Length: 223
Image (cartoon, rainbow, N blue to C red; front, side):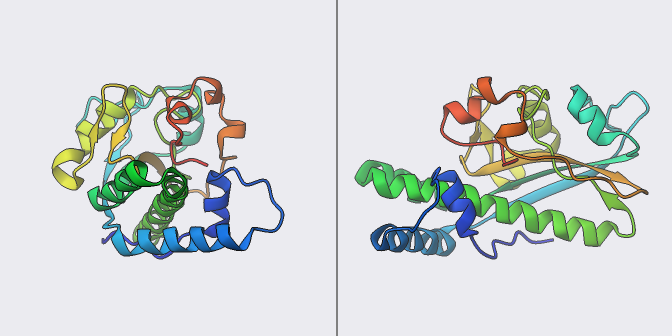
């Protein structure tokens, strides 16, 4: 299974720019289009995933990882398997953003927003591919450490289990943020029954006020 970046949803880019609606000025529209195009040309997305049996105590078979929190327990109710997944836009996209931050902060802000929309596209494509691969079984939506009441420090265990640094070149900062920045980890439940999709985004996340991602001007990939 290959990583696929098939496009950047303009509405998501505007969402991450916190654009409140109305007609876009021609200059801003052109700047956004240019940044999206450069990101599509530069990014080298990578993905990895593994499927685990979910044991009666909630632990994933063969690991010491037990996803924590009421939200995760609700998400995985009725699921006997769990997918751990990760995706990144790669170091090339990270370098593009860092150069812009040193040269032109307005461009850097747009690139950052477009990068968040781009990694969402990579994750959506991976989830679609997994759903096709595992059919006729059903998948939940994806859920990331730091979202809802799932502790952010579970990111380290998830990254270790998936061997992210070796497999796709993703590491963690001391605060638990991923490097490259435009990277996402998540878990997905697998069941024999259709699973309802949960509300998504910062507005419905009980950790929004204390979110380390929001403090760094990014998100956990669940917007």
